[in-house]
Image (tube, rainbow, N blue to C red; front, side, top):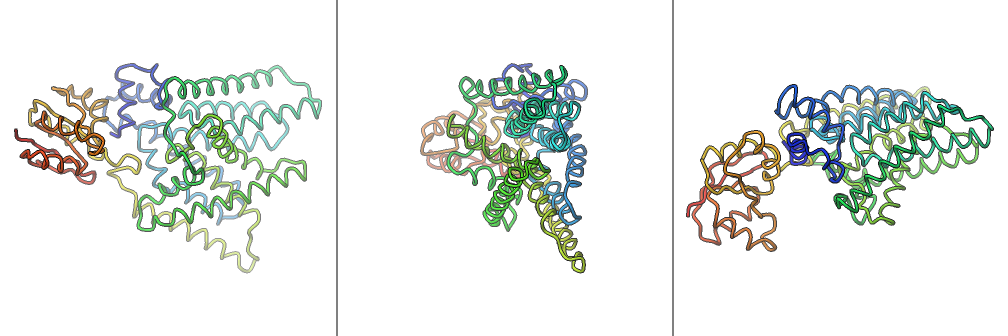
Length: 455
């Protein structure tokens, strides 16, 4: 179990669902399914993650549907490989978090968004977009950045239909408009509640939009491979291409007075970027970063591949070169996934790797005053302590920064008989105190240590 998964489990186990509206752990749909599967199948980590595992085939099919928008096999292969062979994205389909569910509903939202926006206003396609938008927000409320762009075009298309084309607005269309408005109001209200009351909207970048939004996603996608130094290159190249493509499709739309598929595909990405800037400037919100920034990836990569398929073409004699390029990227992506994905830890929460065994081993020693460091304290309090009813309760070991918490760390070590620690600073502090200790066991790959202290 990772730290954030464990807190969702705590909400389920204690029926403390009202907390989801005041904390950043507002992955409502994920928590709902955790509750259902918990009641039916039990408390094991695999059961907690079933909803995200089962979401992957639907996500993959949505990516297949979106790839059909791209002209040419090479662009389709590149899009498919960059998304579905991305180990960073796949992490979230094996964790009990809402990001994978939100990305699934985001992908399907784009499928129906393109269909709805390409024609004059129609009820059914837009109803599907609204439902999928609502499910994406219920999966992770930060996907408001994506949904807002689709809602904006919906309002524009409805206004054009009424005031330019003089088309009478049917009652069902008015209800659809009210439904979308209600969805936006509820989402904005909860985001403001999180910021000003819950005070939990603190995760993200503070200074550099491009680095926070785009580069952290590429860093995760490279997954600490030996060639991770490529992340700045990929960041600048992708940002340059996206700026050029969005500018071009916007100019074409303005000049021709027609909404093209390319312009439609620009809107989710542009919405994400513009709202990042606005919320940062007006509300001092941090930029989306790492896992919250994942929402730009599918619409951004789709937009680049779509534009490439539309404007980059080889002469008929050399058409095989395009297919060969797509095949090279496809197999390179597969090789990257095979070589770098790790079944034992995930990119975002490596410290909680193999956290269960040290907790069980500690309590097998029958401790009197156990302490746990940052790497295991969260999962212990919110998951293992509830699951196994472990006694006596372990206290938190303040080990992260010796300079700021040195006195607290020393006081804790003087009281404890067993500790679980990840940071070398704990061993250094024990040596400074002159306490005799023994490292009973080390737990790779996270390298937590079970330490016995002799007083």
